[in-house]
Amino acid sequence: MTRRSGKRCLVLMRQACHLRLRTAAYHWARVAIHDARSRVRYTELRMSGHSHGRALRSVADRLLAVA
Image (cartoon, helix red, strand yellow):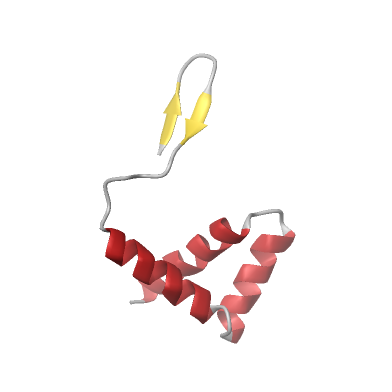
């Protein structure tokens, strides 16, 4: 969630979500990076400078879109 004012841009994590669903998606993505296709996506994101968490969220987004 992004909050902007004239001088600042602050990015915060949403708190209004289902905790168990968020945890399940995180673990699903963590295990899925052993899959070749997910590993390639994860590695590309890491090489472009994204953090581990951001890369996992991207993998989880792809998995949720497929599901």
